[in-house]
Amino acid sequence: MHMQTLHIAFDDTDSREGRCTTHLAFKLVEQVKRMDAELVDYPLLVRLNPNIPWKTRGNGAVCLRLKAHDSDRIIDYVRQAVEEGSAIGNGANPGVTFFEGDRIPLSMEQFSSKAMYDVMSRQMAEKVAKAANIQYYTFGNGQGIVGSLGAMGCLMIDSDYTFELIAYRKPENCGKLRMVDEQKVIRFAADTYPNTFNNYDRKHERVLLAPHGPDPVFFGVRGETPEVVASAMEALQPEEELDGCMIFRSNQGTNMHLQNELVLAGIKAYTAGRVRCRVGTKPRAMEGGHVIFAVDQGGVQMPAAVYEPTGLASVAAKLEPGDLIEIGCGVRKGTTKHPKILNIEYLSLIELAAVYESHNPLCKECGKRMKSEGVNKGYQCDRCKFRDPGAKKILIQKERELKTGLYIPTPKAHRHLTKPMQRYGREKSNFQLVKVAGGGLSEFSNSVEPPLCGL
Image (cartoon, rainbow, N blue to C red; front, side, top):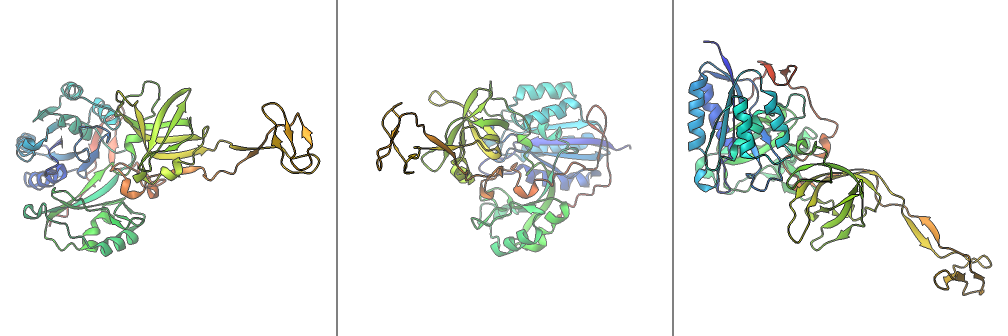
């Protein structure tokens, strides 16, 4: 029987009480490989717009792309596994989608691209799915169909990508304290720099690769290649007996949600993107160490905030009106008391405005600085009593404390999609999937053999 290409994507199977969408993917891959199917890409972990208020923990969805002899059998199995393996009673609202064919419809790519930075409704998702002949199933309120379509349409062929190895706990250990050797994490992070990222925060002496909730993830190691993240298992040597691990290809650490150009006029709540603008007002410090100021784009002004945990507040406080900046941000919804506000994720200082200090003029007779005699009344010298009715204030340009350049949050404040400083200039765009005119996939490269690291 001829093997068909089958795309499977699902989202929102977890809740704050437990479960994990990637863990379900790990279990599904184990099973579908026994059903005479072959993965033709790494399992994809796709993070969507992080500003959606009803998002799951990390707003991550999963897509599996495979070749199979019996797609119908796999579809039946996966649909049932998503329903049974989701925390539906605890707030999960899963959606699972299936598409057979080598070529992902262009409408799917466009939907996915928009889901990175905009608000997409279930109704919009269903309309796209029906038009593209996508099989879909929803549970709970079905909001998970948005993430599943977003993941399926995210090809990451000509866009940046990274990898993550995720190690999973056995069910009996979920909820127990994770024992991770901090010294081994420090050594691993140092030995693999700059090819891994966000595993350890040196400034705050904090392990970043292990979560703290009751979900089945033991740790997740992010990096540039499958080989470097796979090396974590030997380097970290976890003492806890694990259920296994799997490597995902992902848009984490790419700033994919900030590629959209935002226009302040008519900006929508919950969207994300980047804004090129001027500093409109002098920044002011708020309670808690946060800094707020107005930005100006073509005469339209809007408040922007830098929060203390990002580590950027000290930079923002030194901005001056007229500075030309680019900010990556999310739009917080306005209330009856407060307008919409831009929550800044990174700040690029492009051009410093000239800032001047004003001084009283010097006496022409003795050189001492004179004192004003009142508005438009000139100046007089206290020492020699020389009067100069036409004298004016002297403006002297100040040396700015800030330098132009890129400023990003401290690692402990990074979101999943935040691009670490070490990744700038190291972006990838050449994954081995063949793109065809008009969008979509014409065929998959069989050179990809994802190391699944099953223990």
